[in-house]
Image 1 (tube, rainbow, N blue to C red):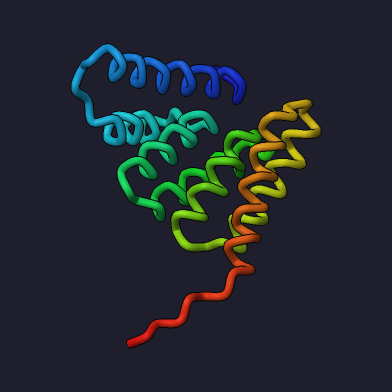
Image 2: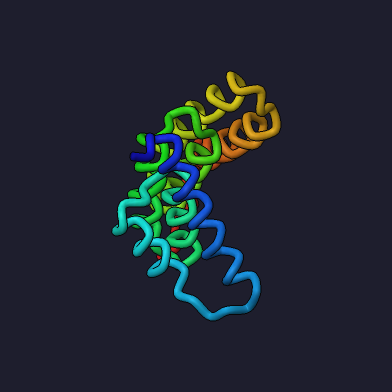
Length: 141
């Protein structure tokens, strides 16, 4: 019986195969294929990150948030998951939640020695803070 680590590797490899097939020009519905992997029990942080990214690319911020939240719930030390969650929350219009996700992600990235990811998340966080500080333009209607 495979352990959690084996299951995560299998899910990551399966997700990579689906993405490689797409890159090779094979016409696949990536979301449907990734959801099928999930339905078969291949849950893992990498698969959830792939789903979050594809949902966001498709314009479904709510679906992206759902899968990004699952990614960080499955692996709280997955800095890419935190970055994706911050991005999805931003697109979903949940700036304060996005700020918290970026901050948590930056802390995780620093702890893991991924200074570039930490820097990126801090930049995204500062952009959100600046946008929130700007007064809304008044309409002349």
